[in-house]
Image (cartoon, rainbow, N blue to C red; front, side, top):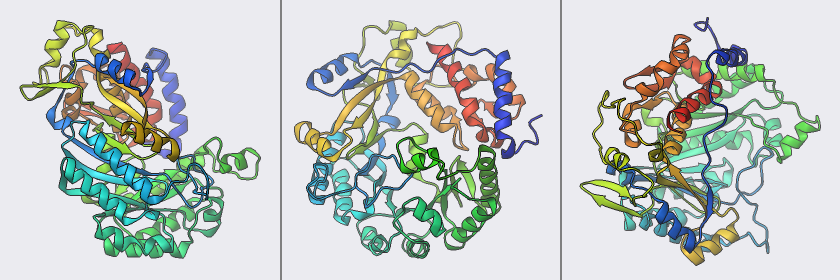
Length: 504
């Protein structure tokens, strides 16, 4: 019944899925949330005691990426609820650029020294409007990485850009200090939408910026576009995409407009001043865009990202989707990192052993041998094994003033630390990895859980999804089909519940 389904039927299919679930009972509830700790000296001591023996291969812990969050914008877009600030004279959150840069470099140096990362594969400058910063900031960040560890020779260095004339004129300077890829926040190609979204550029400025960027960064230009805007039709979206493709044929990020509580656009919609397309209309818009981009040679390698050839894909974003390590610096930045409270033995890195894990778990976690059918169902891992911490999720203080104070005191702006277990990590990997055309690969899964394969966990429990042509499960991995990607939000909770039932 699903062979001929298109995106137009997305929402009716969701209802079908929910009715099918009545015959496939799942555990009610979500993945358990670990306690959030305030980072103090006492908490750091407790964290060391909490860390387990669980292992990760060196190929994982020695590689990572860096995200630099620039906290300032010239103005706030009407749809935006990101952590960003509009600098005002004498406001407590306004920090001079050179001061901000100095402490970003200090935090980066501290974070790298307290991690096992020795090789940085990509650096991403995003957040507010980093292209308003000085090129020297980027130069200092790259120099710091080289001084503390190593910046891969062909590392991807991405800069987010708003296509104003001022920022376009700075692109050449940014290239001279190491930037080799840009992501341009065009968002719309009609003046009415730009005004509604409170963007600070015009359509001619946007097209000019794309043209200049294409000359400076051939093959490495990405354009952001928002669909589902008020009064948008499939015809107007096609026209916008055709215009963009005539200027740039590298990479397009296509995001559905989301009304975030507290934003100006949300309040306008709530009052009836602004009306956005219905769910069915949103599905139509997305289907038209996917079809047009596919016909133009673009691959949908992630739900919202389309690239013309593998070389145009975002290396940095793929590292997130694959569950790899990354260090975030700057106000409001997030990190996922293996803390340096570990022991190295025989080329395997062990976190500090936690007595609650059994000797059998210790034996299993010490083994890095993975074969497709290596799991012996007669040998059971203790459930405590899956509550052993092997990574941390960190969140920096949000506003620049408090972040600066944290860095001055501790060397890092981290305000909260969440211990991540094996289950937390593989759950995050599934939630992000299933959004990609690659899906969850057996090879990457084995970095976290070499003791049991994806096939053993999911094959039998997902036969109904496989027969419905929504999911592919094999010895090589797990991924959503083209149709499955369109209804992933309905499939994912079922898969996460299978995982939770297995290990909780």
